[in-house]
Length: 477
Image 1 (cartoon, one colour):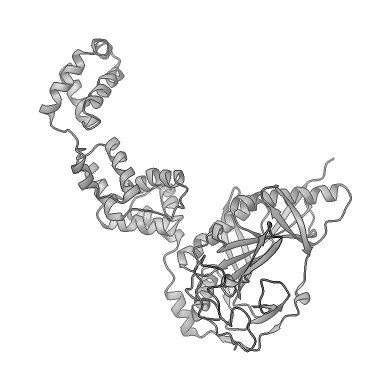
Image 2: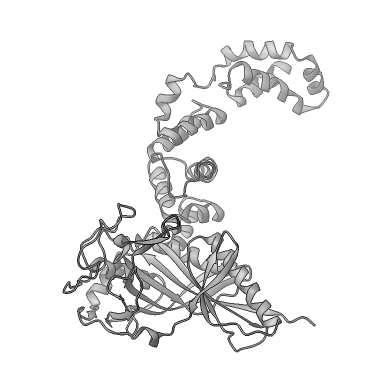
């Protein structure tokens, strides 16, 4: 009988914080920039330079800790993690091993089997390393220190996840929480959120953990899913063939759909950690903690409940709209201008998300103003334009943020609601379609669709379909 295996997964998630300057110096954290231009003696590790903690980093770290139900360490310190690598200018990284800023937290995720709690072992603050650029033409490696010293928090989970789906649900929950706090944009494609996947397999029913491997810095949900499935299969094959799984760090290659060994997995003692002598301990006061708590925004779960109660939105709509904070803010701003909440939700979930997907944009990229969406909705509600014209106008609003009212006027798109003007066209189309008239009078009520279509074509889509239907029925008795 074939053995059944269970996958055991824990994550180390690195998040670049949204500060304007680095963790221990005043250099810019802006993404991009010419290589080695966002640097100074501190973040390039020059002898004699002294680090000073950026207070905003501490505020963000504590805010994320509180939002993920962590205990906040009231007395914490920085430590030096010693290793030699070309992108690490001091030959050590300033991190937190002994007294991390947050401990013992959890987040709840939705799984196929219902709610599940994923425990967070700790969250610690640290500095990012620089970036190596490998030039294959010249067979050289170049180093860019712009990223060196960019502030990170590392969120270390317990090995509580059992599938790629649970991992993605956990990452999405973390990303959304951190985005709501404004602590990071969590853009995986820019490296501001990266995940290391620690994975082992064991026989179903076994309490003993298998030997784990770590896959580093995977920066898309799709790649993470593939990496988990690929590594699970590889480890099962090793065990089935009687070999041992080696504890090591592996690199996932998304193009080849496989991983390869990088180095044997280090333990904490290999890094020779010791308290950083240049940085003073951090003491968190009651006042500081109370201030951070008071600044916490309304989070997604609270918004979902409020949108259902206050705006009478279906739960599904509320979940989609609030899954990205910028979309939730946009929704609220548009409703505050007097637009019908359900109609705002329909435009955001329908045409907006369709065009975002078509143009390869993220959900938080909304290129038009709440004022112009509210104006478009008002034009449809007062009958100035019909739904097909509204979609045409919306494409222009999305592309160039045009004023819908002005655009409708300039392009002569106002609906023809005047029954007197429409009656002649309707009578002409009825006369031209005797078969449809006969079918309608014979009980096939849908037969008038052909006449409606021809009236709409004649009026270039500007006739109000409701008025056209009413006139046809009236004339045909």
